[in-house]
Image (tube, rainbow, N blue to C red; front, side, top):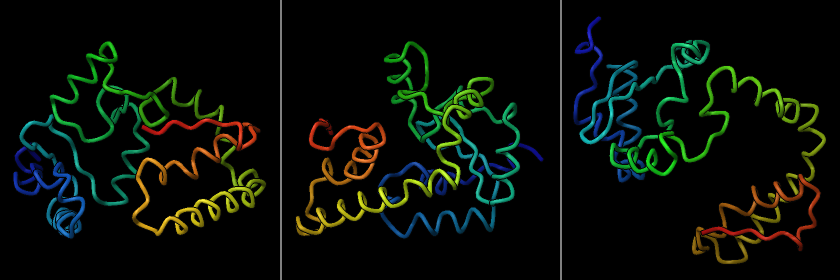
Length: 182
């Protein structure tokens, strides 16, 4: 198989990097086409570095087990154009990542950091905090609905659950926290 055999047509590749497509039915149509015609393909949209598009679950699982071959730390893990990538690298002294989380880490760091928090997210430990998370989520939804629903400002809503959860996880009283969402 050659690179030409796996190349995604330019029109389809362009859909993968177009924010307008993500708000329309065109995105579903694009991935439906990819799954049927090119489930493991190379996208080369104008203005972007080439990237692989993997649409089948079995392939994704296979890739996720090959960490040395499919690395995350060397390139952006989100779709960003070449200008954006250059800007981020300038800000970070060469790193492609504004934030270094587990998703952006390769061996040996990934496993070390993962082991630090892995037990927190195991089913028995999640069960211990389930009631608290549900209470926080219900409160956030009630607050959202009280504002009239979709008219709520974006800086307020998306952070309601994660910021409350983060602060309560660290045993801070809700009235003492300060959350800045800009």
